[in-house]
Length: 236
Image (cartoon, rainbow, N blue to C red):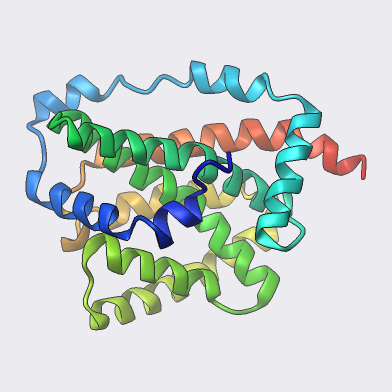
């Protein structure tokens, strides 16, 4: 887990790699519909289900302690589940995209890049709302806008517009998180956000089917992990 955590991967040491992949993704465009259909049945959840089910209570608590040490704060169940999946699988998926890019496997690169985008958007919505709930400020939003600026090459004006849009969206997300502390409602909101934003110019290169697969995978695994770790919190 600590081999290459997502904050390090996405923010500090690998900015050039992220920019290179983002430029490549914009340049390769979209596959034809036949190519999309060929990948539509990819990424079965079975192997991930087994991996999560095999995690013992003791190991989950160890992961939780390590992540709280890294973050420097106690973690709620939604923050732990979303951060855990982002650290473990979010990085793995992006590294797969990078490997396929380096091997010039265009179709697999597009699939994993777009799939990871949907996966991270879904979990990132929970992390942003948790950050707002914890601190009362938009520190997580500022960090995410900076990341999007790098990933998509946004100008300062575009980053400012994105920040204002995310502020408005996250106000709704925060309200949902307060109403439903499991975070499950936010996962549904994320899928809605992906569907509604795919027509914009910023996302025109993405394949909707792949992004939605990523968001649905995040939702499925989050709920599995939540139901597994919730009893451990109840025992505290």
